[in-house]
Length: 254
Image (cartoon, rainbow, N blue to C red; front, top):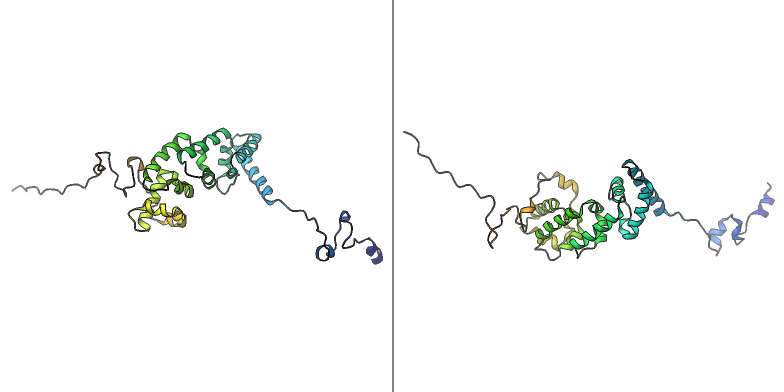
């Protein structure tokens, strides 16, 4: 094609938008808005995540249509339940999507256990909580509320750091705060700054020689710094483990 022919067929900078061809003038010299197709990255990312969850569900024997339908229902129920494999494994999302009625019931249980907390924030930060049984969550909540009884904002603490809904994790965290910050009242410290526990990297926890050791919170009413007490009179009873009395010297045979 000759240069003259190309000049006659090329669109003008302000030419017909239906022409389908653009010159630099369309972008830099024209006052007309150029329609550039935009990619919906969020939609494409969601499709990849759902495909991963569907595949994990297939290995668990869960039908694809059940997973896809229930994931949509869960997200409509609570926007924070948008599937995210960075927060929970695909197989766990598949298990969660198996029964959307169970998910709805667990949301109610969380709200009744921690009425002052934002349930959406809790499940967004710790969706695995929804995989527990209602009975286990309620039993754990009873222990957690006793331990945090001295905090005026127990629900706010749980909202910021949902993993404290697990009594062993709560005991470990309070023990660590007590040692790290040399305080005898870790509950008061985290009540002032619930995000305090989030400032410590997991690597630091695992490097701790006491990592994994936790208190048995089921036997205590409030935080007592490891001195687990048995029930007794109003003053809190006696320590469950008393220091052994010093041995008395025994007469030696002649």
